[in-house]
Length: 461
Ligand SMILES: [Zn+2]
Picture (cartoon, rainbow, N blue to C red):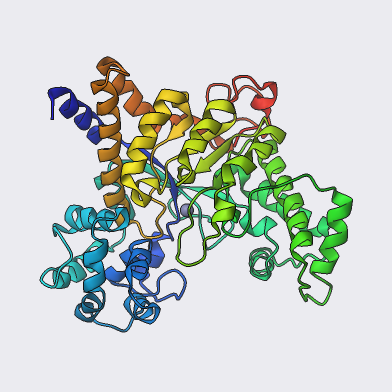
């Protein structure tokens, strides 16, 4: 390592991240420790595997039934370790597992999860989960704050608004699944039976929460292609009553009709986001989980979002996870479209080496204000530490290599590091509450990506 490399690594180390994507549940739920099948299926160290190392365990050969026991509340720590030991050995070099190993080292002082260390790790897990531990873990990881896309509510009114900014999840407002109807009913008491009533619900969420939100977020790419085409309201209205009638029964739409209804509702949500100046964060690329991905959808994410980028030129889109494994296409989008920014959230642990290479190539092709370099993408706070460790290593390596190869000057690197690690995100995501009224001009000029589009100042994501 040269002196230049060492200096760059030091600057990356001391520069805080603004973390633009997590799924953290509320700290009080973790501290209370009550088992919740969906969000806290066990309250021991195995919980830290849930996102995402458990997926690598299964893909490497762990039986699904054993995974359930591993993530369940019943087994003792030593039994849990015995169950996964051969598979832990197989995955220890993946980004998911490395993030956990750096977490064990940084938070618990344990170099690895082994038959010898598991009892200590089990104890340290419980020692860590105390009131105030979100703040403590994030401080250790040198992270100044997080954006949270709650998986529990469409908008989470968090106990820690100074630490955890929130996205509005528009997935449930445009997917039209029975679970989405149930969620909306649980949160609002409404059970829409017409498109107009559903639009009222969407308007309610934006009117109530947009001023406190940093962005809207959708992971609808998990269930369909991102090819949203214009659909008239009249046509969508005809589909909606067939979907939900007065008795509350849902009528399944055929795939084409469901797509058309989703197309209309998704584009309506995008226009609302534009009206309120909220950026639109979209999941792109590889899917979490195992055994479900339709690569024919994923492969076309970049091509499909062109239509959205063109149809909503004043709305700022954040394309998440670098669209891996099609990340080069996302560099092309950020280079070509004024309203496209790329978020490297999750990417560093999907593939650390590809991410380092992506960042290097991105910086040579696209303006440096259009990238956000960190989001842990976790439900548990602890592994954010290990993920941030990996991201810092990758950022330092990428920038060092660009300097070493003569593509950027050493003198420029400190500013560049601060920009990609927190300044870009800080100026891009500004809560409306901190600005003037929704849709007002001027407030976003400095953070607006769309240097060429005159409508840009009217819409911010
Ligand atoms: Zn996510």
